[in-house]
Length: 445
Ligand code: GDP
Figure 1 (cartoon, rainbow, N blue to C red):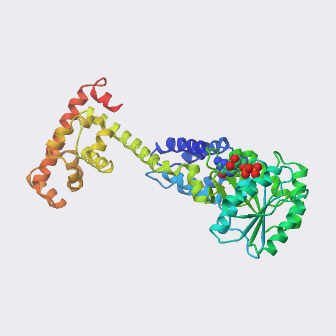
Figure 2 (figure 1 turned 180 degrees about the horizontal axis):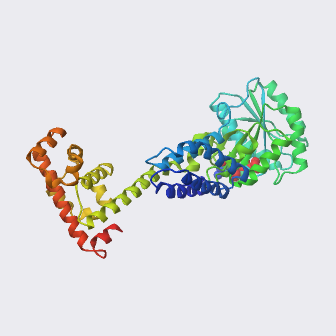
Figure 3 (figure 1 turned 60 degrees about the horizontal axis):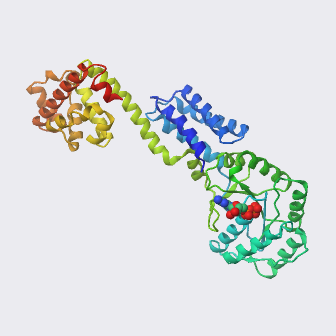
């Protein structure tokens, strides 16, 4: 679901996260692309524009704060704005069905999944909420539609209004109301006829039914795969019939995420449920956080942020490599390496990150390297002065004692660290001398 939008946005954030800090220009550039991504995902232009504007306003204040993970920052801002746009008032999925028997009018185009959703919702109300539900099909144009609902009713154990040939939708609605009252039902659901397109007759019929049934809820069922069209349908139905909530079906497919966003923004009507398949229990409460997460591909975001960090680290590594080529490798360089190793989960991770090091992994280990002592080694370096870090060769006995003491460690351990730094420095120099066509260049690829 929402793969297109998610992928697009991933691309945007990917580019953004390659930079060190989040500047206002970055935000603008990123948001321009977010806007394009939204439009491509079939979000309507005004909705995309408003959305981006809201995000821009939120991001501007934060743009000045330097962030180590600007991608994460923008993802969060965009995510929050998505949730806000998608959220309705009150409990998600709540229906006004007190005062029994409460009528629920189901409207929508033919093939939107209206009958299926009617049955799914009836099942949910019965099983989850312990309601007694009666379903009635008002689709006199397609006799098969009435039978379809009857069959589904039997399947899920929910009563359906007996089919009487020759009645019009208003008569059926009246009969459903009477039967629901007499039979002690909590809810009765009216599944109206659909059309391929909205036409006057369809609207007139639904309006007539609405007037006799006086529904507590009028739920519009919309195919989530239809994008922009879905919004037009929703606007039309809401204007003519009055809609209290939307059910988006086929959200199990990899449709364009635009429908949910525009639908909510344009109609202002809450999306109450989403259909996630053909099975009778494939109906879920609409959760803005979850849908926003899906739009953004939140599952990917952790890896996205990690990838971004790797990029930054790779750039750092490249800068370091340039220094090494010149034969420079001091304690600052070593510290940076050690810290990276820590972040990457030790030796193995770093070998992947800085391929040059893989070649000397053995020597490093011989020099007393082991993942567990990373933090101790870093502590030793931290205990050094700026001057000592830049020129470790100046370390004589008294300095060594002071440094080891500062880190709460033995001088022996510091000696091992110094040996490691010298060996790594030598290695770097050798690799550097191999020149641009050499191992180093290969390793950096
Ligand atoms: P109606 O004409 O609006 O009443 O549409 P139906 O309820 O007959 O549904 C049309 C088709 O869509 C049927 O094959 C349903 O099984 C299928 N359908 C309905 N909802 C969903 C959904 O959420 N996901 C998927 N994949 N299919 C659905």
